[in-house]
Image (cartoon, rainbow, N blue to C red):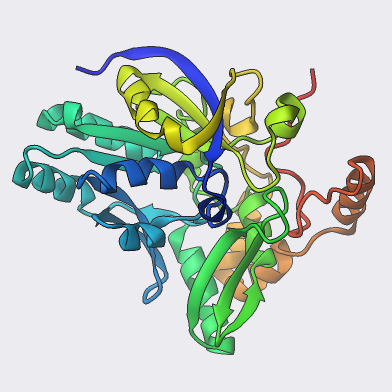
Length: 335
């Protein structure tokens, strides 16, 4: 039996600075997965497949596998048969437990599956704050276009922190050289490319039925300035008594601070991403003219936005919103 509780909010990050730097935000996934893998338990998470350029859920049983699951992935992931695989693993290992980490829709689907199968008390279910998922075909054709022009992609990251957590660098490695992904990331955030259901997402709230929600603790430098770390900060939203147990498993490896829903506010904890008025035009362009055309057309920063970002950089004392030149997608509501 898993009981819902009033949501508890923590800001946190890994004490291990090397692991923190290799994580997208504050290392929440690393901390959680470590707790399970070191006990011989299993983790289910999404892994990028460099052969077919898809993101697939996999059973993860060691830290080497887990490293492949780290990092943000700006495309739709494919659950495949992972619910059944997780169930079979638990049946074959009756004394073990399992951590499931996915988007809100995927994690809540697994929650319902686990209740039907009678395994809810053996799984911890975590979901990730989500902007929305674009068509997997869009990314696949984009990646294939890069490979056709430049060579095989051997590495991918959307949130390298060389310039700090608040200015992530997105790139792929091709033939040992880095190729930036600014154009694709702009398309991802221009609100045209997401799946239709993402614009009506029921999980864009602080109240959920998973055990825990994790993500970036955006604007922590404003709301908890004495706890802010420029190398990354994670948000933990705990929804159940099982989520409380989960946080207890990892708290010794974290620097953390009790927070609240007002301090951690961000757009996708209040409402789904709004659909762009250009969405139909975008997909019509894509169907008629292909991936290279829409990436060039919609991945270009308008001069108005460039000027706005430069002004904001000056107003923020030299901090540039992002080296990707798009407006802060976690734009904070003003009181």
